[in-house]
Image (cartoon, rainbow over all chains, first blue to last red; front, side, top):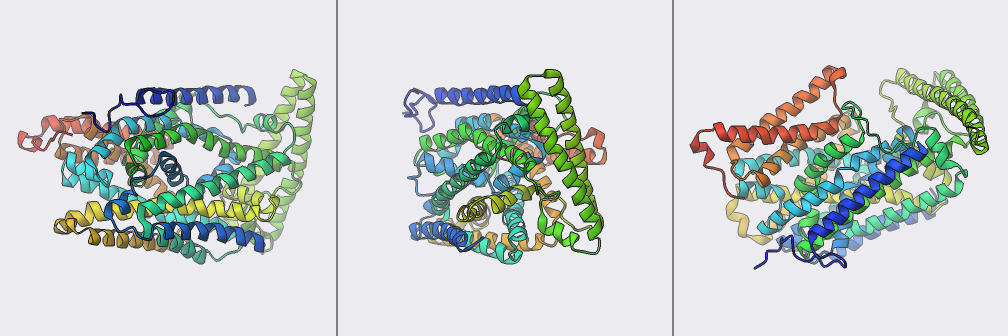
Length: 45
Length: 572
């Protein structure tokens, strides 16, 4: 029987099959924001 | 403020509070009262987590800080998304599996009752005192600017939040926070649009040239307060402490309809928190540009305090400072226009020279602003010399149309109420579950009595917060002291949770002693830095140091403790 916290269960978000995928997506968004801010700093500061 | 502003302000504030009270008036089940009604979806959880974290200081002071020092503060949030991923993957499943009401209840199950009480006591101590500040901080600014009575502002805000938090518990907090966040987003966006309309075409470039847009700093200096590294490492530990071990946050997400809803609510924050904070600091940086082109930009933004002195016995000194500032301000406008002109021509050498001249006049302006603060301090040692908190509110009152002013003042109160409600709810819950039920175990099964007690504790903490806020009015330097207490008490608590989750062989006695030793280490480092400023480190670094010290001491103590004492290690 799967527990409520099973990491491999489907998160019910279109395009994602596991929570690991959601975490990777969030981490990717974070990296994108940092790179974007670094580029912003380079251009404007 | 005119009648229309008052209508918008009171209508929004009282309307949301009344709606929350009415919708949750029949909350008499302990689980619903403390965790919400188990139907809470991810959107509500996400907004509730965001609303609890962002108090009025976020919306009122952060634009002022960016006005003063630029947008580098954004790096403080770099550890947050990573911390929320760890909370989702490790902390949340354990809390849900055990069905706990509080994070400290878990410590009791994992270790022993003394460790549980230590965690609960640390939380109650720092969050209880901070709840007074949550009311006081916006009240002092709004009362000063709008000419309201400070004590009545504190009492009105405190009573309003007590009414719906006591009546509906966690369900009311979640419900009202959702609508309060809608007011906050709407108001801040409106202010931003109005500001954009009033800005010159080269605003972003001007802000950059004047040093306000340094968002990321990769310098590996430990003594710099905000760098990429301190934000990433220190911010990660600080956010882990806050979201993983502070009951005011844990309570927001453990009561979701399912673990999926709680996780998505937290991931919503992981993605949108940095853009939201960036929006607020950018507002401050652009406010700086806006004020460069205003003919009457004040030398000191707390005009109530300033006027008290210009009209006083030493008025001549203050008026002389004003004239000096006005002359420099006019010169600066010329220098900005000259820089924009040579930049548009594409003349690199002339642009470098114009930028240097601009930096020079800005430095002179900063010196005059410091002179103004020194003059205030000399005239009245108790004068409040930090005026950055008054930058955004000055813009709101002088530049926004009526109605929108009421909306923005409502934003400030909504943010105070929403974070305060989360705090009171958590304080009431921890007092009931970790203290009262611990000392009165026989009463634990009487559900009605538990709910009644939770309501009493919530109200008591609310009145304590009001009383403390009124007391702080006469002892303002306590605010700084309390912020320091909060930043040095989290790391050891996080260390206890890290040991609980990841080091299954370590028992309660070892971790309890380690937490106390780690706490002493953090306090020692902090005070050593204060005594020897050349060795002082940025406060964010205290978080990884304190947490690592706790984990290390726990492991060492576990190996040296007599076997009798080691038997208290229980499986997680």
